[in-house]
Amino acid sequence: RRRRRRLGGGGGGGGGGGSASVSVPVLRRATAADRRAIERLVVWNHLSLSADEPEELEAQERELPADFGVLRDAASFAASAHFVAEAGGEVVASAGVARAEGGEAGEW
Image 1 (cartoon, one colour):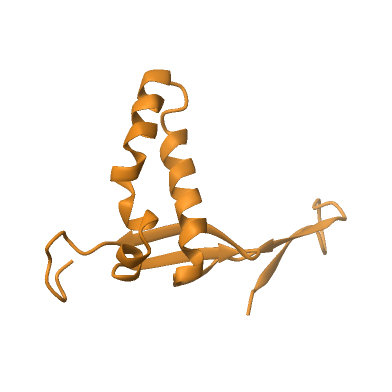
Image 2 (image 1 turned 90 degrees about the vertical axis):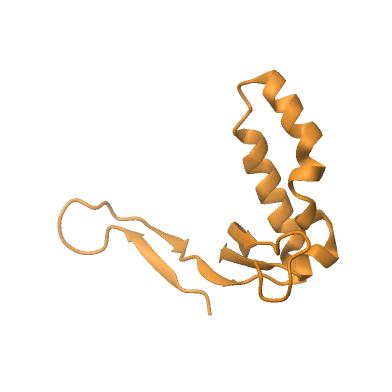
C-alpha cells in the first residue's frame, strides 16, 4: 500500500544520474499500537521547542505528565480521536482530539 516517488535525474537536462526513493506519507486513523510512537514524537517536539532555554526546558519536562496525559493513559487514548501520518513504516506526524473533561458522547 505504500507509494514511492522517485526523485532525481532520469531523462533530459541537468539532473545527475542517481535517484532516491522517498515514501509518500499515508494518513490513517491511529491504533492503540501507535500510542507509544505518537507519545515519543509529541514529547520530542514539545521539548525541542524549549531546547535553547534551559529554565523553560526544565519547566516543560516537569509539566509533561499533565500536558500529555491522554497519550500516557491507554483508556484516555482509546476514548479520543487520533490520526497519524506514516512514511517508511514510521509515524512521522500525528494529530488528535481528546474529549473535553466531563464531556458527553459526541462532545469534543
